[in-house]
Image (cartoon, rainbow, N blue to C red):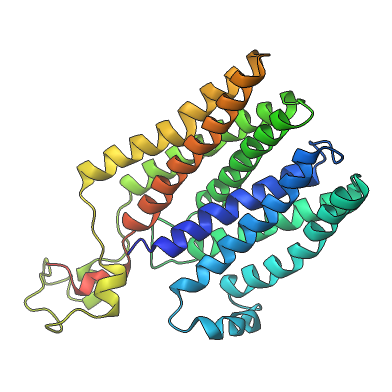
Length: 306
């Protein structure tokens, strides 16, 4: 699949924002601290920026509102509806922190729950596609949820360092979610690499009983939407290198840096390690999301393969 930068940015940035919102909704940061107030605004900005970037991939962005009408059958529509609903408790929580310096558990937990549901809906847009076997697995939403939580709690650790200094809980949870996220991703990649395609040129044409089917001639001379959007290929050796990079930058290095945060008391060291952990994780996630699309093969390409 063609790795559109707008979708990569959307899934990465909004996932980070929802993860931070979940940590704030759980009451892990002091609501009276200035850094927590900034964290609330940051979460809303990240979520909003991610959702806005997703419209850049639409042929007619001005018609994006129509996506809300098909919530009964479309995960894309459900994601849009949930994103709007989730903004209500998140904005309320931010308001209580900004103007009253307090945390309201009921509203916070509701916002955290709806944030997780929204991330799940985003993941199900891809996991529900039987035509892309690599995505069609329960591991896809599991990875999305764990990645959102790990990035969010990593960012919460940075705000804790800048605020009241209570970093033990958010940093510990960030490490745990990072380990779970990349473990799930490892299973996801192993499954993808060992998949035997259910749809082949033989099954697609119904000529498998004769023998191996080979494309004699392309259906048309010029490229079209299918070949440009679903015919992207990445060399296996390059994919392996990028995957290793994503694991190191997105998981291994942030875990080591967060361990430094837990073991240090020097403020400059805490700030540098926490910031670098977030930066490294986001960089690794951008690589991971690029591969998520670039390595996926749509069944329709059976009609274009040589």
